[in-house]
Length: 113
Image (cartoon, rainbow, N blue to C red; front, side, top):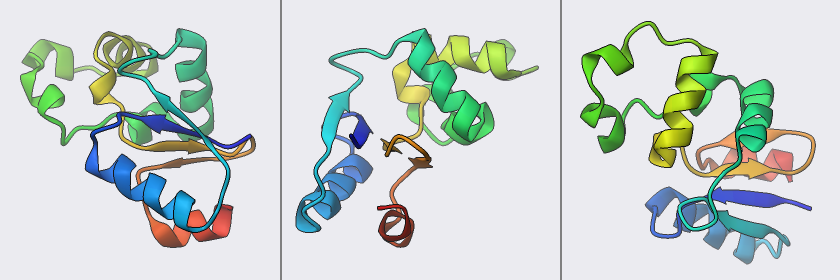
């Protein structure tokens, strides 16, 4: 089962959902702002994609962090920050069971699905 993780009102998530719908690809949508995200699921994301790829350093949430929070990052500290503020995770995260795609890119979606 393909699962699309993200936030319902995010523009990139909207584009990904529209693309999946238009290509008649069955998926489950997991809004982690509503349903949350477990530490175990985030650990799977980090294992498959790397924390550096998941951490959204362009977000408003990132800019609101203190300098101390943004420095000396490692997987453990980044995971802790992302779990406390889920909007620090780049969106969308598409999991087809084998691979993850972070962010929306129609060409990458085409090759993965």
